[in-house]
Amino acid sequence: MFLKRAMSVLLSASFLFTQVTAIVAEDHFDFCELLAQDTIEELENDGHDSEVNLDQIRLLNYEFNEFGYIENIKDIYDNLLVHYEYDDLNQLVRENNNVLDETILYFYDANQNIQRQEFYDLSHTKNLSNLIDVINYGYTNKDKMTFYNGQTITYGENSNPVQYLNGWNLKWQNARTLAKMSNLKLSANFTYNENCIRTCKIVSSSENGITTTKTVNFIVKDMQILSQSTKTVITDNSGNIVDSKDDTITWRFNKYGIVLGFTYNNEVYHYVKNAQGDVVGILNKNYGPVANYTYNSWGRLV
Image 1 (cartoon, rainbow, N blue to C red):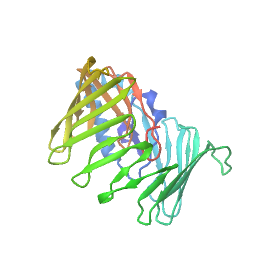
Image 2: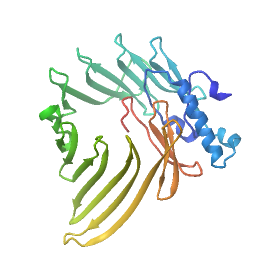
Image 3: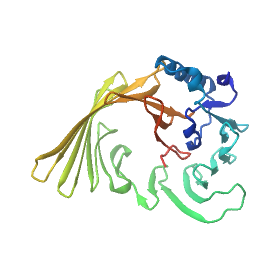
Image 4: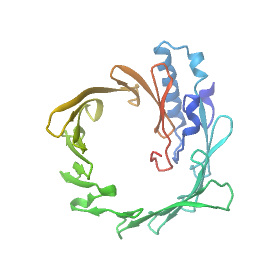
């Protein structure tokens, strides 16, 4: 059975399998096999014919180097999606990414902090051409990042950043808990329970005399957020309500506590994940595509 296939990871939905980039130095095939079986059980429990839906499930093939780090990611047709190269310290130094259509070089300082990224047109040879972009990083002598791509980061008490990227000003409480963040366009306030799990978020923005305020309340059990309710209120410059809306999201978990998807305003949606647990797609209740996401090697949405 395909679930036993060596060095393969469940992805699901053929339209998504070329949208994934990933890098992890761990081998989770047994766990991924459980997730794959759980996905199949979910399909069957929802009344879908597993023989039909199994044909929609796709596998990514992961090839590892001798140290257990991902070297190649391929689709089931053996097409190369991403190739990774490492230095003697097992630091990622080059990425040939067919999905993003670019080659990226990574450089590090003596403390193994990333120092610079260089982006080129895609190449699978040593010859690189057309430098597209460069991102530089700066640090204190204690490995604290103080500079990123032309922007500075300032720290306050307890080594928390107080002035961050893109003009964000941050305020903290109880040493390490973010209480407020604001810039010229937005402000957000946060409250937490006794376990420092966020229970409320209020985000406000104003433009052209119109203010939009979103109040998000989270339902928490133990250390896990189960659902959230969002009330959006739009007011004019006199404080009159122009529009309002209520939304509810409830997350759905499997027996291992892994989130499978969510229910949004009574509509069921399913997550599609890669081996690292990144959400790379969303399917509707009929397992049709709603959205897909691509990440770089550091897990940042691109």
